[in-house]
Image (cartoon, rainbow over all chains, first blue to last red; front, side, top):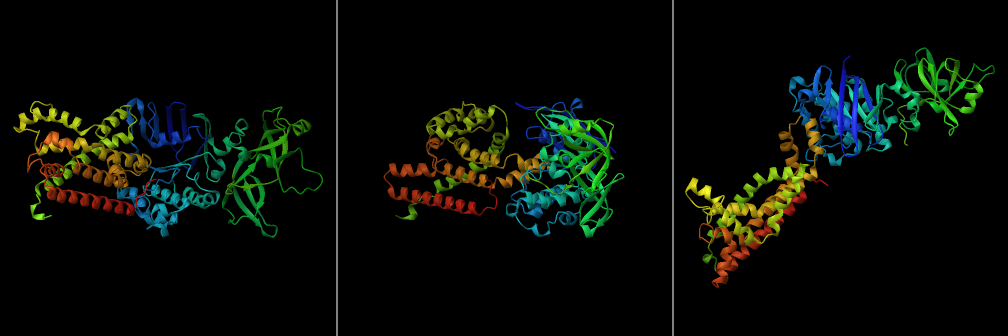
Length: 366
Length: 227
């Protein structure tokens, strides 16, 4: 596996981007940060739309920018596809001509995807003769994604493609993004300020804060870091697990999924046995018990776990975050009173009671 | 009023002058408008002010300096005369130069507005779809600026039709060479030939109205609307 290496320094009047990153050139890399954190500037540097005077960027074996040798590959010569927050469809062209715009500019032998494949993948067949102004926001964004795919990019850059859409439209687009991730071997860099909308997609996570990278790595590793809990938004503290569907218990309306050697019951999912599913274990939905209860309990999901780390305690807050190893790192939020009462220490064997499991394809509003 | 007494020569000269001026203005106005719409340079406001000068200057001021510049010893007229052997002042070529300067803001400003309205966003999209800067200009920026071009052509053309002071100063009043409609009307009125003055004036009025009407009607039907 090769990587995307980048080092950018950009300075504006009240803002500065200073990053030095390496991420895999496969799967979905999410660049997450609040507005003003520099995430869009970082993406624009990767695209070549912004030129960092001392920048350096390497995509696999190709050098796209090397300021010390005065190398800068202009945007139109980079094998990228770019999807902007606003779809930016050309208003003087039909949907068909928008889709063809980049496709016609690629040499036929470099085309790895056909017009028909893209219109099928993004379900654009009925829109082709329309004008962009006559499309809904979600349809426009699907055309924009299709238009970018038709340039057979080696890297797809997406700048908050769902930000301008309402919750329903986000739900409509997400399956297309998941298909994109599964069916095309195309690395995607995805910028967002709403982590919950991409939990289903993210493989690698980069957290940006004030123009600097606060953390980067495999998504669950970053998400379960105690020092970062809270920086990703209140409803995302927790961990994201990639599980496999192992059985359905239809009479109880449950599906059993597995990760590592542990299993979880979740509400029944319309998925075949063997298919993979991402679930989100919110820290607030997990409690800790020292042993298996002696009397029967209604809790279905009890995961044997080891305490890895106890988060910082804050006298102003009643709760504290605990990091557990349950095959995968997971987080639990308990009260400080319970922490004192149970005398929890790193290394202790405990049980994590999972009160609820969220499906990450349910986008929530903040 | 008898149409047979109408002198058509000033009409042809006027139309030829307006068409030539607009063509020249589109050629040099486009890059200037493009630069003004996209440059972050501080020189921009200076250039904008210079471009707008003909809007506020009395035509006689512009005409006076042009006369000096185009004259046999002027900065433009001098070299021109030594190369071609003929004078720029009181010639059709001189009129074109004068009209170009005089109508400059009427072409540059609508183009600049159109380029600013479509902005960088669509260009960036075009570049990311493998279009070079030149390709993106031709395939995206220009068609999106079609309303701006239409306005520029009409305003430039109409403004040249109506000019009087500058032409009088630079071109003089040479029948068949530099005598345009506005001056012909003035001459007829001076000579109390009201009938001839009427024919030219009514013609100019109707023509101008018809052109503007056509433009506004066409403009409404254009597919490109940029907020």
